[in-house]
Image 1 (cartoon, rainbow, N blue to C red):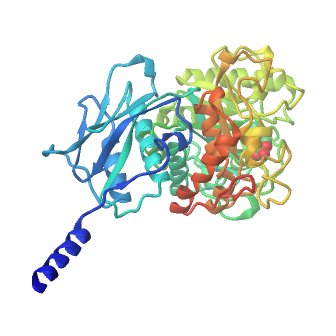
Image 2 (image 1 turned 30 degrees about the vertical axis):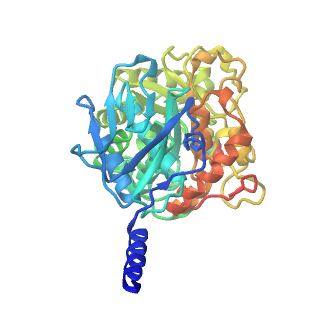
Length: 511
Ligand code: TNX
């Protein structure tokens, strides 16, 4: 009798120990109302979808990207199970498919979760990618034990699509140079937050950072240094293609910028013939702006620009080439006007659309060229005088190189101090009342690199402001408010910590 009792107890303890309690994900409602950028519509359903190694993933035939691998690999990395590619008895199913649903546009997606199926569909591959990003971020924010064997995801329908088509950031690799791996990290950050443009500022006074085969001294000489006099660097054309491919896989467009006619000291130091007096200046490693100009009235200047644009157009799939055009303080107004119109026609001859900083609005540009608004310098530019498409990057709100507060060591403060709430609380459609909202393509947050020398410093200025810019670009204005955003931003700490991101712990957020 004693033995029997003993055996029963042993058996019960054994059963209790081996039975795996499926952990529920969360006490949040669906989890999707916690992600950044906030989705358009979320409706709760009933029941739970069991995600485990018994889940089978079914991929639609018309999918072109490797989104399914992204999903399976990330889940495998994060948890202890992998998804099945063959259906088993009792399997739950994840379905990924591209369907014809124009209401989702080019970037929207639908997530439908019930007890049997977790389905992500989109009209295009980009939408599918964003749907997967939403699911992965939702799971990550739950801080689920990595050893859990089953995750129960509450039933829900999420319908989501972006407010603006252009959601980007700019990285200045001229003032300080950053490696391919650093740029790839930057691309990963953008992808996580459903941003789709990385504008690379590839040439300025302090450095020329892209190989031009027909003008090799641009990088040999012009790429050799950076701000502070430390060694610079440059991307070979094959490096650039590697970056473009990495970005394309993540549905991000790289917009290359060669700033001209000002901000050109690196080119002028490399080739004396580009100077009006035929003399090459010294390389420049300071941080002043507005002192250099290409020689506007020399034929060779346009030969040079034609070669540069031709080589870049050949390795850049983006429809845009950015020609800078800002702060040409030592170019006369009439020369500037002549110059921009000539450069625009060169860009168009190579099959691209010109983008320039808002200074180009003073010239007679074609209606499809794009103006990037940064500041009403110089001469109080009135953007209302042009009907062109506009990218909004107001320095007072969107400059990632502005300090957070007086005590921030990195960054500048000429435009404003930009705390996290100040970065978030503005509307691209009413920032410049003179613009027609239909002109606004979207937003870009530029990181100028005068004061940032390495990736740790980049992270400090980018985070935690970048998620806010992503939400401004993606989420409907009426669905955004700071109090709710600030709670969601605090949850991003999980990601920052997982990726060892050196973020600024703003006192406005309860981390
Ligand atoms: C202005 S924004 C510039 C850049 C500087 C930046 C620093 C713009 C078009 N020109 O050359 O790096 O300020 O904040």
